[in-house]
Image 1 (cartoon, rainbow, N blue to C red):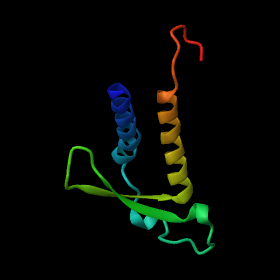
Image 2: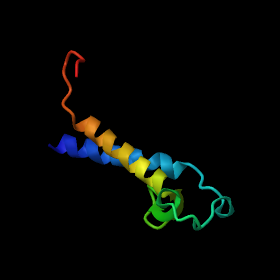
Image 3: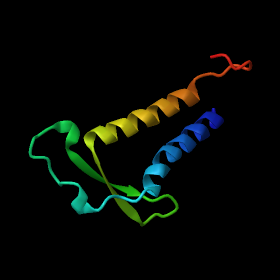
Image 4: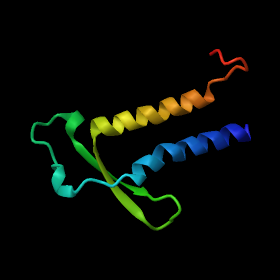
Length: 91
């Protein structure tokens, strides 16, 4: 069970690390709000703690659709890791 917990923890960090490694776009490149009211295109900013630092946080801004896609991808990674594998390679 401890191995599964370590795998889940590692996959969670792996899902977050690429987003933290990428430079965020300049604030002027994305509008702070969308006048059309489309929920999928609304920009949401979150402060994320940088790995290896307790104090440094980075502001990450993405559209609602991008946040949803990233969360779905992370969930699929966890599901794939939790799926029992077979010795002969067949799933």
